[in-house]
Length: 162
Image (cartoon, rainbow, N blue to C red; front, side):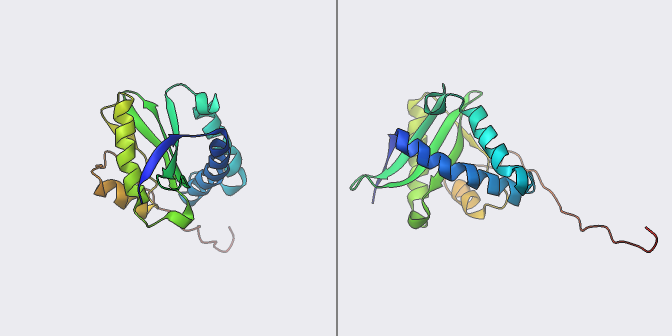
């Protein structure tokens, strides 16, 4: 089945926020950046700072990914201007539609949309733990431009008298 990009409707935007805020918070906790107790609030603040006017924020483009035949929504896509490049802030496929090739199709549609908005390159960030996304991006021609690494240390051992 073929995908198409449609500008987000008000309902799509509401549904997308309900998904992206907890998902982003969870990823930041899983990657050791935030603590769980404050992650939802930080996620909300982060999204609100990037999209202060919501769907109408200048230089940000929010789309629903829909099946051409049925208009069923299978995901979301958010790009914005970052310096002179398009920046992929979010791409998500609804769980029931994952592993069906829609992510790959969405990446192709992203390239078309970015070019239509005058961009000649696309940048993105992917969390280290997100192996599936990393493999998808590499398979469609993205290259690693920066790599940050971390090692979690065990808690110090308690010794007698300390």
